[in-house]
Length: 152
Image 1 (cartoon, rainbow, N blue to C red):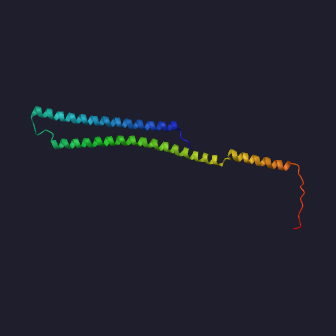
Image 2: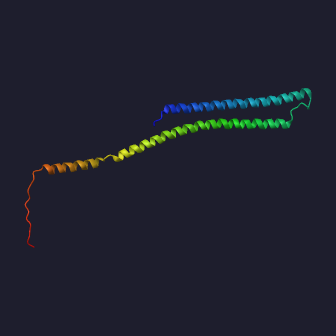
């Protein structure tokens, strides 16, 4: 089975493009989360400065928990984006490996066909033998006299 290299390349490029788009979207989400965290910190600071009210201020422990959650989600987004990129690369590798396997099989078949062919020397030897036999067959026959010595 022969693969269409253009189709394989197109599929690999599409997968790579999808991975890049996913990474872009993940980066946007991370940037928004960071911006929200910054805005939340600024709002809390401004509120405290204006009202001097400690009761409504976000508890430091809650902020730390939110920071940890955002950090975890950031890592998950990055891992997913890298996973998509690796999957696209693995798909391309598997496709290329299939092409190489097919070519290897075809080369094996061709090597067997080459081994089955006669070499130039073998052909020359066969022709020489044929010519010798033809000469012997069509040469005028000579009768050779010979004597049998019965006395010892």
